[in-house]
Image 1 (cartoon, rainbow over the protein chains, first blue to last red):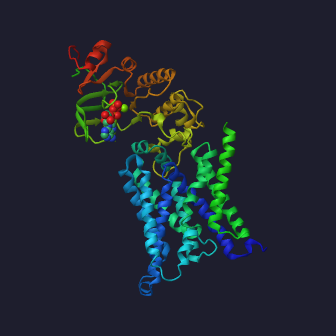
Image 2 (cartoon, each protein chain N blue to C red):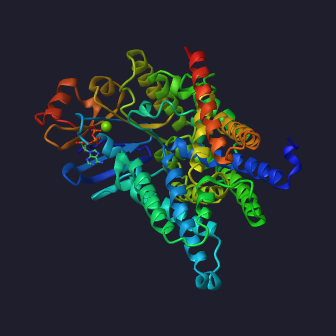
Image 3 (cartoon, each protein chain N blue to C red):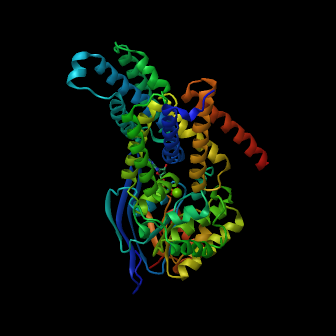
Amino acid sequence: MDNIFSYVFMRRAFLVAAVIAAVAPCIGVPVVMKRLSAIGDAASHSALAGIALGLVLNSNPVIAKILPINPVLGGVLFAVIAVLGIEFFRTRFGRFSELAAVVVMSAGIGLTAIFSGFITSGSSNLSSFLFGSIVAISDFELYLTLGLGAAVIVVSMLLYKELFYISFDETAAMLSGVPVKTINFVLMVLTAVTVSVAARIVGALMISSLLVIPVAAAMMIAKSYKQTMVLSVVFAEIFTIAGLFASYYLDWRPGGTIVILGVVVLIAVMLLSKKNKS
Amino acid sequence: MLMTVNNMKEILKVDDLCFDYPDISLLRDVSFTVHEGDFLGIIGANGAGKSTLIKLILGLLKKDSGEIRLFTDKIGYVPQKANSFNTDFPATVREVVMANLYKSVGLFKRYKKTDEEKMKNALKRVGLEGYENRMIGKLSGGQQQRVFIARALIAEPELLLMDEPTVGVDAQSVHAIMKLAAELNKQGIAIVMTNHDTPTLVKAANKLLIFCEHGNSEYVARADLTMEQISEIFAGGRAHNHG
Ligand SMILES: Nc1ncnc2c1ncn2[C@@H]1O[C@H](COP(=O)(O)OP(=O)(O)O)[C@@H](O)[C@H]1O
Ligand SMILES: [Mg+2]
């Protein structure tokens, strides 16, 4: 077989994968610590609804001419609305706040199903967002991912101690003057944007796994919040890079390969760290 | 009402405070003052409204009427059952304690070298020197409680609100925590502590706020009272003479 890096699209795929793998835990760690891991699913499925709507509008020649929108932008819009909806519902369910994400995800899935019935041209398009198409990334998507990735990393580094405090003890954070509501809002919007852009690359069905699984694996062995953060990035990089290699040589879908590799490694780490503890 | 001559600076003054939850009538005309150097014990049965009062002072709940005046913004808070947080949260003692430096460090900023010293000093004050790299979830209940006290101390409070700090810890830790509170009080921190373990708290405090069984509250200077008189007030009898 040829050298995997002799293909431009593969080099590009590795670059994008490495960036997303660094970005996902920046969002994933605080989201998991705040016990909001279902938010990734809710946001990605809502993004899918926005993407589907974008594709519907695109497949209508008249609308496509007047208002040619990139479906990803529709995804971002819907995902942002979704996470704001979760914040809205979260307080209303009290202790059962995790219901909020499930309700919003249901709405996302429902809308996706309805919109997908109206996509006339190239229905395979939607499936490329469901499962991702990391090896077929346009220039626009490449720059969008790089720009967004850099922005998410910078913001989450700037807000590192604030995000830690809010995740650990929201009341104490508020009392010491942390702008809790604003930072929660920023985290939600970053999640929405990350998830909808990454949907194109690893797939809407799998992006939330990339947010959560590296963090879950890191938590098994980390001895601090900082270590959790660092190890999550390390795990995410291993999953995506090794997953891409494997998918190339096995000829499996990249998104699925990455996620399954992650699950396998998570289980292995879980078993090994149990042994160490007892 | 209590009438003692006191030249010390006022730290907290509560007047005719009333507060109800939608279907529970709770605090009626609660009044008391905390001066510099005071140790106020708040006594009352479970459900009397002690935690609610603390949350009102902190601004976590909105009062219905009355006045709460704070003369300092350096307030430390040790929440009730601080040790019932998510113990699987991967955080070190260092990370938890330093987080409360937020006010002095500021948004977006990083910790400085001196902040690390402050953290170590706070741990020393609560008797947990050298524990900074331990995971908080792996400590005993009493140690966790002291970490939360250290977290409050690192911001150098003038007023420390401790909500049942001795609940859910072993007997030895109860002793250590009460001793620590007395020490901090001697070092000049005004303390407000709730507890339903009445005798221990009565011994430590110089002022008491007692939520009686019939729902009224009584504010007294501890020195004036015997344990029996306190039980009497608690039961709602007013056959004593104080102030
Ligand atoms: N958020 C709330 N909504 C409604 N009722 C509450 C709430 N929090 C506490 N209560 C009720 O108010 C009463 C006083 O509670 P609390 O202040 O925690 O008492 P204490 O700390 O003295 O044990 C209790 O009956 C409790 O059930
Ligand atoms: Mg209480």
